[in-house]
Amino acid sequence: MSRFYRIGLDEYCFLRELDGTQTVAAILTRLAQRAGGQTFSENEALEVLQWLRQNDLLAVASNVTNKHQNELKLWKSALWLNPLLLRIPLARPDRFFAWLAAKTRIFLGPLGFVIWLAVLIWGAGAIALNWESFARDFVGVIWQYNGALLLAVWLVIKILHEISHGVFCRHFGAGVREVGVFWILFFPISYVDATPSLALASKWRRAMVALAGIYMDLFVAACAAIVWASTDAGIVRTIAHQAVIAGTIVSLFFNANPLMRFDGYYVLSELLDIPNLATRGRERIARLGIRAHNCRSLAPAMLS
Ligand SMILES: [Zn+2]
Image 1: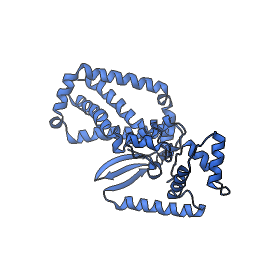
Image 2: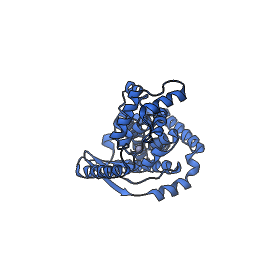
Image 3: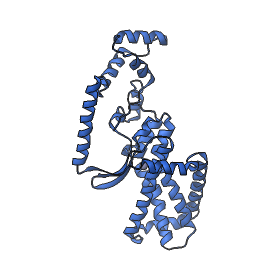
Image 4: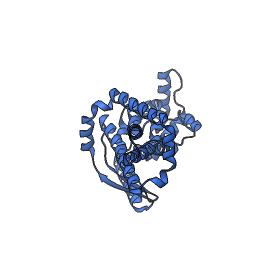
């Protein structure tokens, strides 16, 4: 598993100068001269160096590799041993996603978005126009539905959700490592390992990979709403009703909630441009109440 570190521009300029031949003070003086004023204080430089050491970036090359590998082993065994958090890889579908992304290319760009938006508006309109009837079905939700049917609808939506993450990731040129299931507190949560997408240069693309699941959920929900509104009472209408709820309320509750560290967490950290290391940006992050500093180095992008 590789790690990604995103650093601020000031930090980059400073780190680039660290070639082992100059003192920190000399580097800071030169940077300040170049920028026509102080760009980077001594305290900030010390903090950066400390951060490098904590993350094994300031060690001799062989040492880094060993330590990193040991850590990785430990992390993996911890995941396997912890019955509350069990990760079960199911497949390495990179080639499948590459194929699918090529086949669906036309729907992954602006045209796809226009279609998506049109279907969403149509679906929302269908629900709004028949709101009383939709709400009535909603009240009877627990008594009416067959458990197996409900599970099947969920499963299909979840699979489409994960496929969407994978396809967008591959479409933007990043590989998909594996798909599988996390067992968290004995509850299964499917995931796509889209860690290579963290290396994409555009933050909008990185955010889109994280957003792709919800994007698909809303599309499926809107299609289901159109089906629901145009069918009479029966099994199809029941399935469609269930799909609308699963694709909107449930999906948004889990995934659009940045505090739960599912998809929404990744979308937010991309859009707010929260890097691994930005001494200057930390205040802003603290104000927002998000403890995202350094998170990248610890968390691969396991999109649920
Ligand atoms: Zn997701």
